[in-house]
Image (tube, rainbow, N blue to C red; front, side):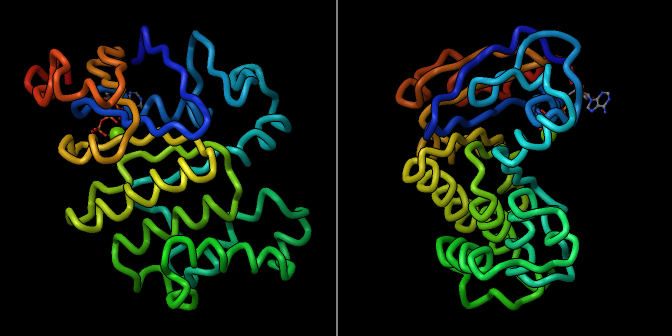
Length: 233
Ligand SMILES: Nc1ncnc2c1ncn2[C@@H]1O[C@H](COP(=O)(O)OP(=O)(O)OP(=O)(O)O)[C@@H](O)[C@H]1O
Ligand SMILES: [Mg+2]
């Protein structure tokens, strides 16, 4: 249950969403992508109200939202390239998507996206034969191929070792800043937040308790102590 959660993210801004387990981070992502219905309140994406959209409008709006989750991100048995091409599905006519007939420029975009995440050499490798960090980079390449303007990333580095986590978060941050893509990303590794985000939003027990620029993060009242009082679980 979320309440009193109100914030705005500007294009190209990277916001870290943190808070203890059960705070409502995943619930918030689900509401933003309208995978769950909020009972009340307003959600605007690129100036339009998500909550009022009918299914056709929602389908169009979802092209602009790229999702990167902790797991079950990729089609395991398909190649990295195929997974990235899947990002084009919302952008090509349905019959071509169904027939998996992607045009040359779709493929070119997919290769360019794989290149951006440094995985060009792995284009033909099956997704389940890639490391966790590589898989998350493929998921980011898919979002790039999708040309989404917003990336919602729910714990994208939860299962990665520290080096891979830093590499995935740096990639997200650089892409956001280079291309003006808005990023909202939840994570539990507080120590990674200052090097990654422009701003931090803290949820606790379904409420927004902190929304502040990253430069103030260390001196926030809760500071690194955000997990100390877990509130209700
Ligand atoms: N499908 C659901 N139906 C009802 N309640 C749910 C559902 N999913 C989650 N909740 C509840 O909503 C609250 C927020 O859960 P949520 O999964 O959003 O937390 P979270 O911040 O993502 O936690 P974590 O860090 O563990 O991923 C919890 O109390 C949880 O039990
Ligand atoms: Mg969660």
